[in-house]
Length: 348
Ligand code: UT7
Image (tube, rainbow, N blue to C red; front, side, top):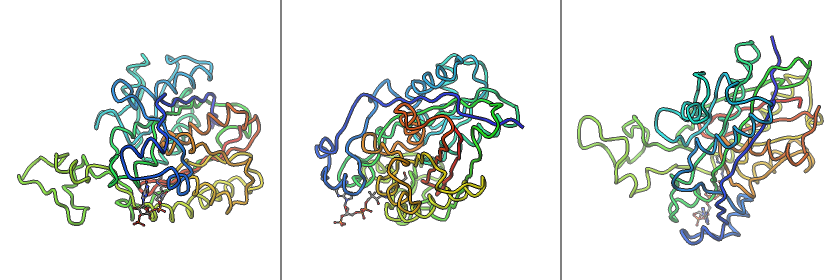
């Protein structure tokens, strides 16, 4: 068995900055409300045309690949995590493979929302550990801005999310005790509808109470209708308080699980990179784990919640700013829609 490690990291955020005050042009909200409840000051939105989840993923991947000292031709497997793919199908992995001129390698898309990057990292880890692949590209990328309700009706969701991408290259390492020590993945579908985008979907609305959009024909017609856009059911739905309550329990739990697996304690953590869901969630977790400010990295203030991209963007920024050094114990953790959650413990 090999041990795998992160050989290169990269991130990309679009140039278009939207402050909280900018959002007041579209909806009834305020800088004060958003900052107080979420810590977010601004977020980035991709260009409406030309910039996609895949193109942002490519920007991040190019940096990670270069830092890993390889070329796109050396990548032997792609894992692409996103909830906002360019197409309903096929996934972004194959689009990235094509655009980066890679060999005909396997490309897998992961649909685990906020914990998508941890799931993707875990998959890459298993492939490298067994010796099947040597250079696995893991990407988390999101273009949320294309499908949010920017009216007052959708403000509880739309103010939170932003666009961006992060990527890592996973390679085997011979250095004993270094690299990815373990990953831990969980799900509980009991609350699947509490944070979801129901359409386009094949459920026919069976999950939704008071579903107003039953098809008026026996077959077809339910993927997306004009009415769904008008009544708001086409947009993501979130019961924010339910998500918050579960997140503050599951984050510490899955971090403790990773530490216990490796006979370590919270005192051993040099840097915790939590999924940037809400600054208040990160602060809550920090308090429960009794970690000092310099041991938790947050950048949600600048980028909002970028879902599958948030952990690799934060990891890359923390590393670029010198907050992660060789030998450090780095813990990644995420929680989100599904609900799904996970953690990864890394000896850098
Ligand atoms: O990435 C993983 C997934 N997501 C999360 O982790 C999110 C977890 N949840 C949260 O972060 C919080 O629940 C939110 C920030 C989304 C919302 O905060 P909250 O304290 O739970 O607010 P709320 O939804 O209970 O709404 C409180 C009030 C409501 O007004 P009334 O009914 O009390 O008059 C909302 O209409 O705040 C209102 N409100 C807003 N006001 C101004 C909701 N969104 C906004 C807004 N601006 N953007």
